[in-house]
Image (cartoon, rainbow, N blue to C red):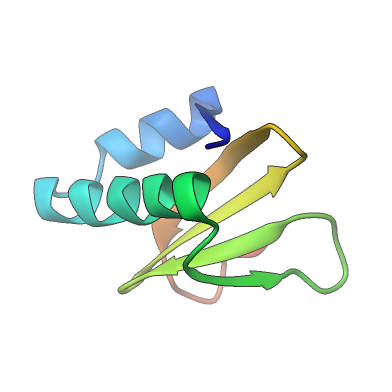
Length: 81
């Protein structure tokens, strides 16, 4: 299992989501950190990856032992800026 770390920005964004969305996003991130399973794609044009959890996206980076969540939010036109 990889260690899951949330940036300060990601924590604030996660706290602003409805409870059901918070559970959906954290569950998807934990599943990815534990088993490497999830709807993950490498971002084009910048470093990092995105994880899809329903209508929400998590932008993160990872190495051999950690997954660092940088952005959490609803998928829209400004998600990947």
